[in-house]
Length: 124
Image 1 (cartoon, one colour):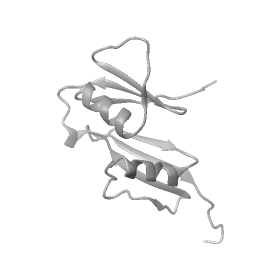
Image 2 (tube, one colour):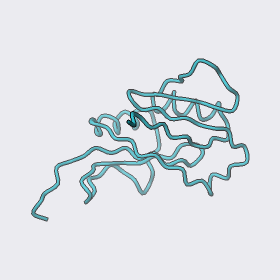
Image 3 (cartoon, helix red, strand yellow):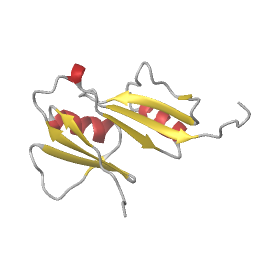
Image 4 (spheres, one colour):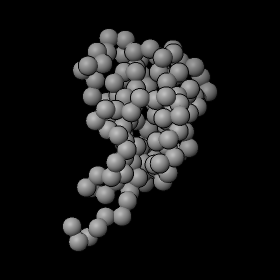
């Protein structure tokens, strides 16, 4: 039986990645051992892992994570309050597939999309 998933994304600089996720997105660092080339962060039931990839070209990074929430408006406003840049192509909006969502890019160009299910009009 599957119980959870923890995506692993590339990072160029652990300090920069940790700063973004902890100080801007509100995650906490987790794990019992501090490995130089690995980082684990958690917020609520979401855990994301990062591995060192010093040669990563952010323009060639297509890492993506879809994070579901039950408080999309609150999450969006919280990120705005912390001056997190919202992806220009991903502002908060309702999508035709029944999600209200928005996206941000982390320092390594990993795309984080936050989404909440909304009622879909079955007559459309």
